[in-house]
Image 1 (cartoon, rainbow, N blue to C red):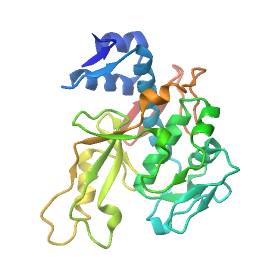
Image 2: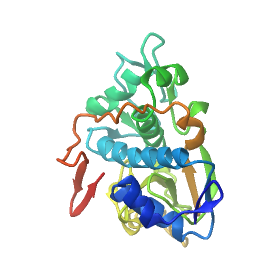
Image 3: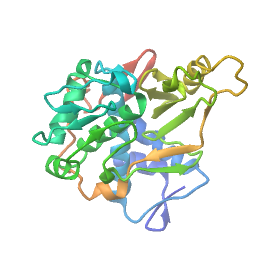
Amino acid sequence: MISIAGMPVDPAALASEWRLNSVQRETVDRMARAGEVFDYPNAELLRYELRLRNQIVVSSLQLFRSGLAFATFEETRCNERFWVRTDYGGCMLRPEVPPSIAIEDIFRNGHAYAFECATAMVIILYHAVLQTIRRADFDQLFRGILLYDWRYDQDLRLTTEQTRTFLPGDILYFENPEYRLDEPEWQGENAVDLGNGRYFGHGIGVETAEGILHHLNGKRRPGATRRAQLLSQATRPGFAYLAAFEDTGGIRFMSGSTETEAGKIRAEIGSAVWEL
């Protein structure tokens, strides 16, 4: 159920009045069907959450197409014009570089970078937030970025909630409890819920939940008895906090997106199509 200022909201009316795209419509439909209440003090906070969730999906697909390679921490690489590679496989932002420029470079020159799946999720979040808040605020909030595993700037305000209500833009975790010990990178897969029954996990790509589980089950150690599973949790940024910095001057589009005549982004992965 969706509630704004204590009043229930009809998702169909919301979709029509706000002219929501397919990802946003799926989001409000899932919220409305949920057993929990999604309560907002005002409409603008819900608007921003829908905008950022949509952008997380867009940024995921853009990262997928960027040429970014999958790598263990030992094999991490980055564009040293903007980043300093650490001994433990992280990438530290150079102090003279604006974080907005460095994050955008990953999407423009993905072939120069290689990360494991958790770091890719954090990169997606940084990029999505950059598209929805004022650039000057982004550069102020996210100085000193370190790209390494789930290390992230506290201004993302990430929380991991126990839930079975998964929404587009959520980051989910597929656990592989009996992975091969010589392949620790396959102990699980972080993945963005893209909506439309698809997920993006760096290293696996765009897949169904069944496809991700099938891949992980193929990485179990000999004699394993437990199968991979999707955990009942979702990682989300601090929508209400970030909304205070929203850029209301329009949505920026990165190169590599396809903007249709209706001002939407059209993305095609195999037989799946998103109009965002």
